[in-house]
Length: 92
Image (cartoon, rainbow, N blue to C red; front, side, top):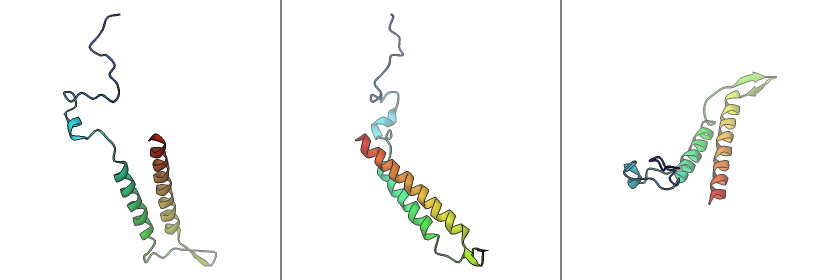
């Protein structure tokens, strides 16, 4: 079988001639930055619970639907961050 110019390269080997930014280290993720920004977002969303929103009456009591959405959003973000953290620990 004849050799071609398009041979498979190892996935870790990136030629700086083809991708000059490899010398600057731009070919990676930011796992610590993702975790920091994500947890900051969780805290920021939970801080939105403090405020002057009213809520709607439901059966005589106050039911704050916006609080449910904020807590749900924070919970989904936290679950995603914990999943990402566990996935990165398994990868090491």
